[in-house]
Image (cartoon, rainbow, N blue to C red; front, side):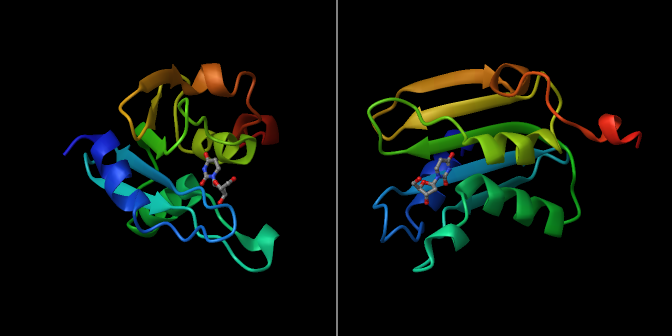
Length: 129
Ligand code: THU
């Protein structure tokens, strides 16, 4: 199964009764294993979480910290780009040349590197670590 297909499958489980906008994300980590996540909204709106955050949490919980490739999918006219907060979350575990595939249900896929999505990212190096 491709990374986009994994994101498409997990999107079905999204809990998005408020926005009606289901999102799926899949991450390939350094081991080759794939971790998936979907958005999980809440009646207290700000407590909702993005699909990417779920996939990152699954990866870290499994003991991995290196993202090789990312896929995000939604039912939209044009491919959905990760929100600003998720760009920062992804950057924590990515490299500037890590590929992010952004897909629509109808089959359009656009790709961008993390450096394109989040240039001049704030990183641990700024903290001197
Ligand atoms: N959302 C994601 O899960 N990932 C993105 O990259 C963009 C937005 C979710 C958050 C919210 O549940 C819904 O999409 C509408 O913003």
